[in-house]
Length: 412
Ligand SMILES: *[C@@H]1O[C@H](CO)[C@@H](O)[C@H](O)[C@H]1NC(C)=O
Ligand SMILES: *[C@@H]1O[C@H](CO)[C@@H](O)[C@H](O)[C@H]1NC(C)=O
Ligand SMILES: *[C@@H]1O[C@H](CO)[C@@H](O)[C@H](O)[C@H]1NC(C)=O
Image (cartoon, rainbow, N blue to C red; front, side):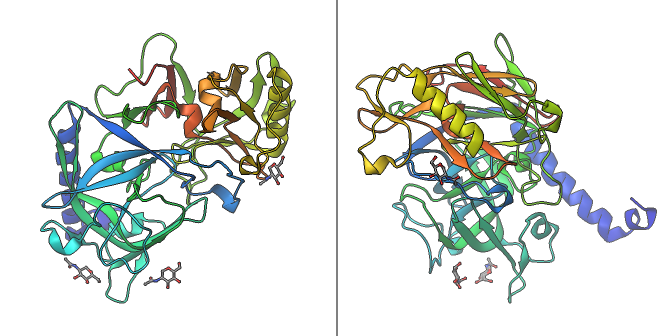
């Protein structure tokens, strides 16, 4: 940066205060800590949809993983969807003329002594892709998702408290979040917002000041009393036998998904039958798969989806259900026990990720198991959804720019 800017006293003051905040936050997580996640049954994908294409998501009653955190002073509990596919933390706020129904009370900024509005001149407002000036000079944000869910409100800063599974709560001050006054979409009444954990400066991970975190999501049909787990900072490294580390590919810079986590999918196998996206790997677009904890199914481009679908159908020694309109065009089977389906492998640039039936066959209702994949007409981007992420200890190392997968029983 040019000297004249560096020596501007105002600039110095600003950068110093930003540095101080980061220093305190970093100290807070220096020792690292873990939190439990809660699960809900809901239908939808909330992640920002890449390149404006939507996809069929006909799964009913499917799962999101919720992170409990408290906002404000005195603290108010918020359960937000854990979403690697989104940049911002937001919660529904009073007044809420246009909100979805939630069971627990809404967060009321007027009742919190630590609530501060962020002005639209603030750098923090510029960190939000859609930050704009409200008539009162506040930072108006609006944030849209894959399934056309929207949150619209005012950017604010607050004290946030995370319940650590080690017992001691972790308190973080001056955390930027969206106070959503106008939110709609496909949320269920247990959900109160979204906790974005992308690489964006506004995400929870960035604001904690850490550059690594890990998650261990329990498979979808685990008893809801068993929590998934997430760790931040020291102790969240994923190491040891069986770890597969895949390089992360940066999203297109300047786009609304520049801070999301992408890997490159080369092809898929159903047992030993392999389907490549292209005969010439050089022609495959780098970063063609988004890793998204906020989308339940794994979303594949139509051609690969059809190939995998047909091969699974060929290999499962049962007749699929064809007479249940609830199931749409999904590939589903009636069985009282976990389906004994084929192993499905994702061939990623950097390594192969093997998915067993517990990660690929999802029971949308009792006694029915469906292939947890979905299709998109978008050739450029697919999604590794949260069903497939179950029973992997997944470590994100933002310094080395890799995501590591370690097969793990996340219910233990
Ligand atoms: C997904 O596949 C089904 C059946 O194979 C098809 O009817 C539907 O149009 C596809 N959806 C998209 C978004 O490509
Ligand atoms: C924040 O902004 C809103 C709307 O602009 C205003 O009603 C509210 O009083 C402000 N709160 C604080 C603490 O400044
Ligand atoms: C809320 O959002 C809806 C749809 O996005 C819009 O029509 C309406 O004007 C918004 N209301 C407020 C108060 O921002």
